[in-house]
Every structure is written in C-alpha cells, then in structure tokens.
Length: 431
Ligand code: FRU
Image 1 (cartoon, rainbow, N blue to C red):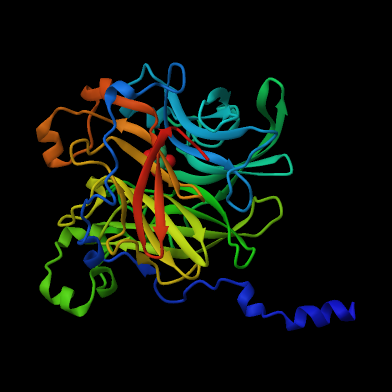
Image 2: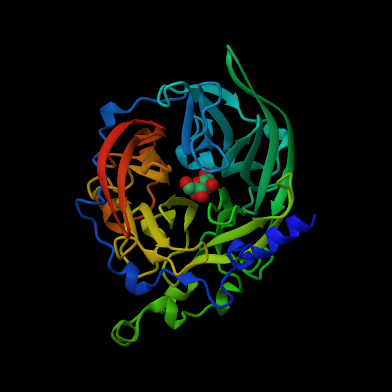
C-alpha cells in the first residue's frame, strides 16, 4: 500500500487532467473565416453522376460513422469492418429523410463492398421520434452507440428537440455476418443553458443544434469525452459579437460586421465521462465557438497526429453569417492540448470544399485516423444556375439528383497546420 501511495504521489497529477479554459473558448474569428478560399489543395474532385451506385438497396444513406476502438482506430472484429449510417427509404423526397432517419449498419471484409445488415436497433426502443448522427465504439464485444435523440416519441407534429443518447449492446459475429442484441438506451446529455443553448433560449432562431455525439479518448490523459455540435448559451436576442469573435484590432477597426451576424452562434461542445457504463457525463465548456461567424459546426470529431489535436467540423455555405463566403465543406483546427487555443488549419479553417461547379455534391465529412476522409453524395448536377448563385439549400424538385450513398473517400495530407487533398480513393472506402 505504502509503495502504491509513493508511486502515485510522484505522478505529475496536474498533467493527468485537461482543465477546461476558465475564460472564453477558442474562437473561429470573423477575420480567420474571411480568408476562406477554394484552391487546388482543398477542392474535391468532381463527382460524376454516371459513376454513382447506390450502396443500400432501396435506401438513402447519408451521415456515416465507422465502428471504432477506444483509441479511435477503425475496429476490425473477426475480420469485419462495420459502419453505421442514417438511412431512410428512397421513395421519400430527400429533404424528408431527416424526419424519419433510422440508424442502419453495414459490414464488409475489405472496407469497401458494404452489405446492409439492417437496423442497428429497434427504433421503437430508442429515444427520439427519430435518431440522428453519432459515433460507435466497441470494447470486448460490447458496443456503445452514441446517437442524437431528436424529437420525442408520440409527438403530434415533428419537433426539433435534441438530446444526446447512448445505446449499450452486445455484438456477435457469425459466418452469416454481424448482429447486435441486448440494447439498453439512456439519455446522457441535455443542454442546460449554461454553456449550450437550450431550444427555448434559441427563440426559434436559425437552426438549433445539440447533437452528433462523438466519442474520444484523449491519449495524453486517458480521459474519455464526447464532443458534440451545440450553440453558445443564452437568449438569441441578447447575443452580441465580442472582439475575440471578430479579430485583431486592425480588423475590428477596418471591418463592418453586420448586425445580423450576432445571431450566429455555433460551437463545439465537450462532456467528460463520469461512470464506467458510459451513461454519466459531466458537461464541460465548449472547446471552440464560432459566434458571429457560423451557426452550425456539425459532426465535430478529433484526430490526433503526433502531439497535436485536430478538431474537424462540417459546415454549410448557408450557415455562415452574412458577409462570410464559405462553401459546403470540411473545416479544421489544431491545438497542442484539448482545451488549447485552436488555430484554423490553412489559416482560414477550410480543409475540403465541394467544387464550384457542383457546390453541394458531398457533405458530412469525417476524417479517419489515417487522414482518409469519408462523406456521402448529396445533391449533384443541379443544373439550376440561380440556385447556385443564391447559395440556398437545394430543394426537393431536384430530388432525382440526390446521391444518398457514400462518396469517394479522399486522402488528406496533414502537416502541422496545413492540409492538402492528395488523392481520391474508391466510393465508400473505409481504411
Ligand atoms: C449533418 C446533419 C447532422 C444530423 C443529421 C440529420 O448532415 O445535420 O448534424 O445529425 O444531418 O439528418
């Protein structure tokens, strides 16, 4: 006993905890985002309509995540890789799919030819009137599937309340493939209005979010977290732009930021594990905010390279605040600690942009630990120039051009605070 105490007392205990910043979170500033520009290092190759093959019979597939090990690596269980995805029958208009999203799983031995396994769990047993994106981790045959519980069971009309949920279950592999059983569901996090806006505080403003939980074990501390998409807390009508959200003094002096910008308040949230069964989490302050810059920092996830933390998010052209031109794309930031001073990659944050000629061709990019980036084929080949010009979300009359399947995987090189797309791999390749 004495020797155990002796050992622990010499451990640098302060190193074992990533302390949240007491002041304000790192900010993606207006100044940084104003540098966003498509170029050859960040523009994805054009997706040709003729090449696209539906991966799931009779289903749209969009936000996708691989089954991972605790350390973030893509899991291989008895030779199988598994992915989970939001899905909906493909006889509904694509815009309707969010209202009926169901999590299905696919498995494959080569990480490319995916066989649809079915619903991950019975949606009737899950929280929410439908389930939105999340992440999945396997540990000793037990699976922990984090998801967004959107709306409530039995609601009269469709509602947009979002809570973070977890399904714990068992995974079995047989000669017939993969199956899951014995699920138990818990709500693990709801916004309290202190760090993350509640739906009521959002006052019905631009697109509310509290969603997309992504499991992350910090290799520097061994501590376990979920990161998620949120909005900065407080009543929408009382929000103001702070100097840190704008930029340096010179930029503040020389740039007129529109009054409407203060309504934009996307952030990246964090919660720390507080129980062995993954059902208790302590809400922590955000790691990044985009107040006055962007409303939605979607599907946040961390990738480690060397000693650096890389935080990636997806965002849309139409969620940037007025005056900032950013494409539908993958954006990234880096810091040397979990609560570090995140700097945008490539100075502006832009990592992968859809090409100008096909500005909505893909979405929901996720960077795997080896730098490969998966996403799904969204709206392609719009053919309607006026829509491209206004930058609005495509509407359903283009539904015949919705992809609804995994896009070609992109290979990214990441070097310090710079990235570059270096290759395009097969459709839906997960390695
Ligand atoms: C991004 C997203 C996610 C959400 C899902 C709902 O594609 O907005 O944030 O979980 O779509 O369909």
